Length: 622
Image 1 (tube, rainbow, N blue to C red):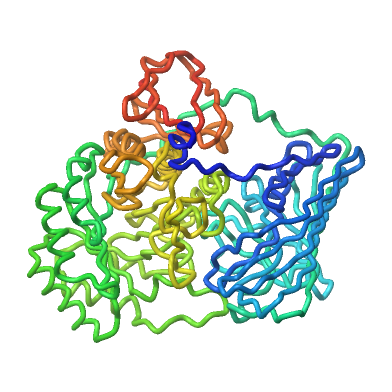
Image 2 (cartoon, rainbow, N blue to C red; image 1 turned 90 degrees about the horizontal axis):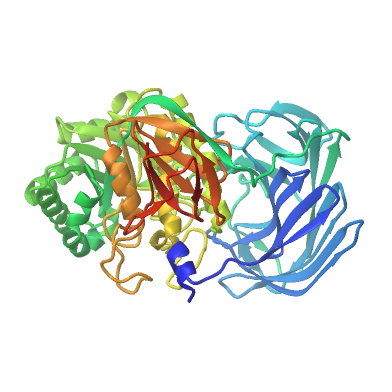
């Protein structure tokens, strides 16, 4: 196992290699049989064109690729291969894939047949349009009846599908450059993937209003195509060179940096009690104890939280998944009695009906649940004098689709997760493009209501879109995984700092980006890549953020937000490199001190230009 890979990613697994296919001004990356980062004159046209198969729980069925053939000439390129997707049941969907490209076109087709009834939530093409430079801009959509809809890409995040029955989408890529993307073989519609912090608008096959999972019948073939055509004026400019030095601009926000929270899990109580000193290391101000009666949590969990709260001296929030199985007053009174018996004192109660943790897609029926006004009223009656929070234990998607009555709660909260749909390094770091829209959309909905986020981690704490998270005992990069190795590496530290930098303009009162122990925790566990008990790299980033809690904080706008993200106080500047390449940042004057954040901070040259290493986190003392 490479030491560098382990340090950066917490795993020795390498990402799949990609191959650049280029002709004229057009280029695209071929990776795992799909196309990524389609560019024209350096401008991003499409983020992804992929043929994907999901299992019945929306997990990704990986393709086994055979007979791959790639040919390139001065006039274009072609790619052909056979892909086999295997369902958990053992059924195989076999697809013959053909890709071709010229200087202004790309075509991707799939011809498929299954050797048995194949249960799937989705089988077909997915096309991702980027968000940056697109959100709020004009778009033209051609529908199945031949009509053309002239509209705009959603600016605030659309909870439902902005466009349905799509035959073609035409959008402006850059001044003088437009692209038409045409779809064939099935009914396509679009969702705003920023809901899940994906940095894209996704056009996909098969409307969500149709039943799922569904079956692809044995020996019944189907075909689909996606075709892209670029329309460019001769004098349309090229994109700026990505290798240029990155400039920074510090922008006051008018907010103070939020308090750092840390989550607690009842299954990790022993490890959490052993790791209490770590809370001091990061300057944590608040604990969030997760309590789910439906998962068997009871008096022992509450007693454990009480002991941790007493020994740490930190304030406590109880995060309660309300079963809503009995009369609400009766249920809440029962929880209050348990809390009293456990000796647990907390100043904040966050309540969420248990059923609301599961997603309700467009076209589906809302699950039975008492009105939130009644849930909140019962909570206040059972816990008088306690600040009450509402929102979603799951993600912004669910909060956006089921708006909570803000006048009945003291603050609103939700989580996010970066591996709902894709788990490769690039996709995870591109989620910050969407996260800034998540917090601005939340502010648009809830105004200046006190706002919290978290616990939000790379690994998925729960799966609102299926029966369970995906087991990842092998420590790979997979969507919806219950464990993600990058949480153990510098990648996880950079992700944590970039997250904090992205949400600074929202004026949060608390931000929680880890638990204390376990797979989402501050300390490594037994059998993980680092030694049991070692502090994970994100601890050293959180320690810098903890110092800032309550201080006036500034946003840092960079000329390459796809590469460097940062935040600043009066005396400190924190930068995260969210790429696998070194990045050069220009400062207005030489700083007093520059250090690479790690277990032992390493001083870097204090110059007007600093080099931030791959997935590096840097502290600059001004």
